[in-house]
Image (cartoon, rainbow, N blue to C red):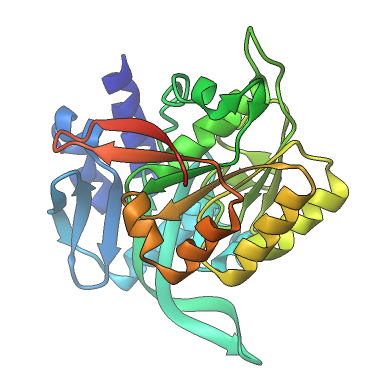
Length: 304
């Protein structure tokens, strides 16, 4: 059943490819369709699919017209409605998919206002992986209280997927605990995948999503406006993010965040994350480990 769902999501993502490229994508074996993570389109290069073992060329060379058609299909021929995310280099697509874009930045007063002459695209094949957080959530509580938690893995390790499922479980609650009010600051639009105000992913019944907002601005906004019990953010990457997280912790709000690091030791070697640890804001870390088969395991440990 899980394999069939993965194949179905692959085929849904392929609908956003131009017809001549879609045919090549759908010719892939069922096993590869179930395992595929992204379509990669680059002007002048063959259509490629990202598999656990790396990229594989599967189709004809991509043309500028193909990329224009992709953008039209992804936005239902209404690019003006997606202008805000387009200037940030991505499109959030109905069904929970996300299209990352590269091209020529249109600059005004030092700010990117749009992209033109699109030259590359990455169509992420979003899969919710519902249930992966079920065994993790109970381990994030001490005496009935949620503990501030970091999710660790290298890029592409599954942090956002786990974050989304943990948010869903925290929001929904369970037999032995009530659901919590969660504010999800979804700066890059990958966790909830909002399309015109509607989350395309299941992030739970008590989750409020602040989409396409920098974390350093979004965290205090949520604190002021939404009375959250937990604030969830994807990727702490800057001093301003850290300062906002410290502010939230000082207000007694729980924190759930991701960082790029394979383990706590690697995190401690980076100046920003070393300061994060020194602040003592986060109590637990969940290390995401990925086997050669692509299967992921989740190890919870106390932070020093």
